[in-house]
Length: 80
View 1 (spheres, helix red, strand yellow):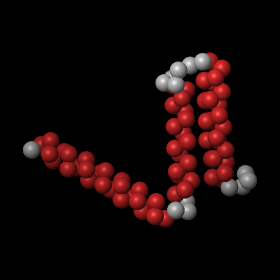
View 2: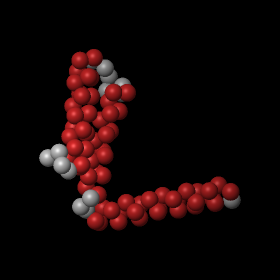
View 3: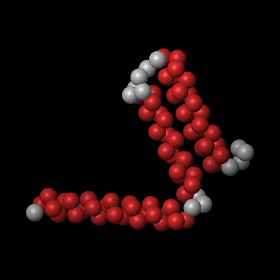
View 4: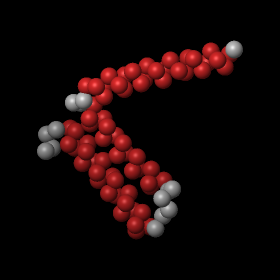
């Protein structure tokens, strides 16, 4: 299990998610606290899928290109 880097990454994400839940239960903090922001780390699991899902890789490449081009378009519109 520990020989694969993505398994270790997944374990760290799960531990951080569990730790935020425990901290919120113990301290009775509201869900809008800074501790709950660590739950967003779970989104990083998508990076694990990039290794084997080629269509997702190409989608993200196109998305990043589109975002950069959209920035250029907005700059031109702002100047005009």
